[in-house]
Length: 388
Image 1 (cartoon, helix red, strand yellow):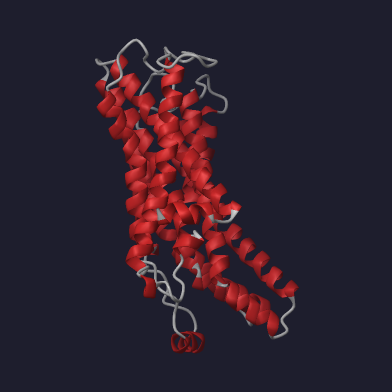
Image 2 (image 1 turned 90 degrees about the vertical axis):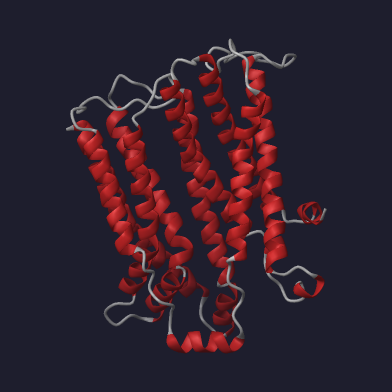
């Protein structure tokens, strides 16, 4: 009940973010149901059904990441003075975030179920009844229990991930801690850069190994009733995890580069902000780099080839690209909210607003200077074994 009351009283932009989470959940639920429909209509092709289900895990993970980012920026779950006195401590706030996330994602899953049944022709009385009956396996009965289990994946995973993320979120530092932090400088550098580089290299090596002997024959993607090699998906997954782990370390290095060689006030401010926010925005940036590198590699493989993208492939790609980009923007908003007090203090001390805007532009330019070439290199290395 408290979660519903907070939902009614939230800002419209917060409701828009929750609706976007519901829409992403609906898209993933529809993909999972399409996989179930394909498995029901093609019982002899169990391997293809399993590979389709594995491909669905990619947009599912992107949706869960987006749901967690939205839960972290939700004002209703932000620790505030006095909430602990009425029983809303960190544990209760994490439970509240889990309930709110579960409500949004469950709504999306129900919409996916209705839309899926409508396109199969199981629900009548609306336009386009049974418009995709053949693609969705309408000739075979749909296992209701399996459909409900698949639809519960996104709400359960998103709720658990949101609860864990908010429960482990550090509380606001006291004034003494803030003074020590200001005197000592930033926090320690992220330690995941070596592991990230190793996993990225391992992922590219796996993709090259499983693509031996298949040069010039791009691997098929789900959506046209065919399968895809699991090795390529495993290699890309390792690459994505590696870039996500390396993202905070690379962001921290960007901050150090901005402060190199006698920095001025603007460069010093921009660099310190990047170093302080490396863990918060580095991982989403790394994931976006992985997704963009996959898109570039796919365009290199299929751009001039005879195999078009299927509708389900296009939906999955749109979900992954949209969710990862939205996660990055949401994390940037969270970072802006976290340093709002610092920005106000600088303005009260007489710092010009143009200096803050210049620092933002410097941070953006430094990130693009490092991550854009990295994305292109990873994309070229991933596509090279299949195009050589």
